[in-house]
Length: 292
Image 1 (spheres, rainbow, N blue to C red):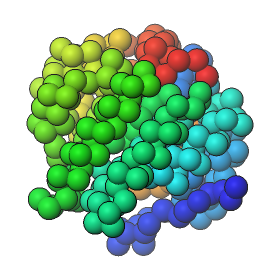
Image 2: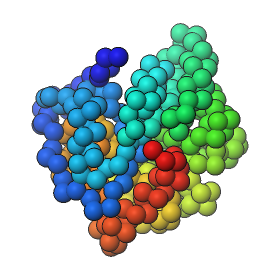
Image 3: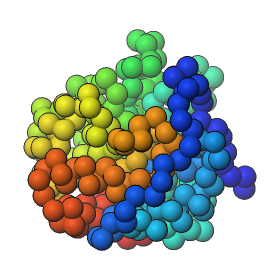
Image 4: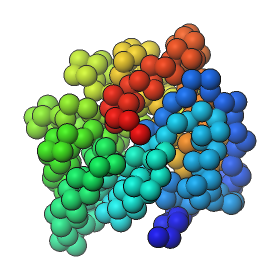
């Protein structure tokens, strides 16, 4: 199996960014997990293979990661990686932005069936990332997204798996879908992008809020407001690597080893001890995904 499968797609803003990986942060005293990362995506001047990414993560107190698929190919890749590496669990899904593309080719249901098959594997512990994205998808693409989202919800419930939700500019529709169809027992808002209002809705329904490097961004007041009201027993941490690198390295390549930067920022913002927060986050992560 080749590693990695694909390179990060460059954007105009990427052309002038610093492509070097940030240095290792101070290790955490209480280890935690990165519950959402994409190890298959190459990035930076010297892309880190999965083994090096995981080595760096362990060195700074990251006990394990959830490798997340965005299509059938990367989902199968992640499930295979989890089978051979005890530091990795897998999440499998069709990303909402892929759903309209596959629907136009007439193969969306075929690919969803492939995800359903992968979801039966022992070290696949979540269905994701799935959900709704109204930022990149126009009106014509919303029906396939919704069809795919509902099918993924059914797969998660049928297999007793967590659901990792991608929610971009679609908070109301994501919430209404979960309430209409019935959310899985363990539902995670990956890379939480809402505010205190959405956080309270999540709290009312026992849905988990996973915070990425975006919580450290200067313009993320709404996300920090969500963090402030989120029950501690529902808080998770992630990188979404190689994207969303936390301050002060925003724009540079991300990796699971940078989780400590986000966690320490969260602890400082909440005015709590970082070890105390890490203990809660690690416990929450294991409650959602089980043991590594």
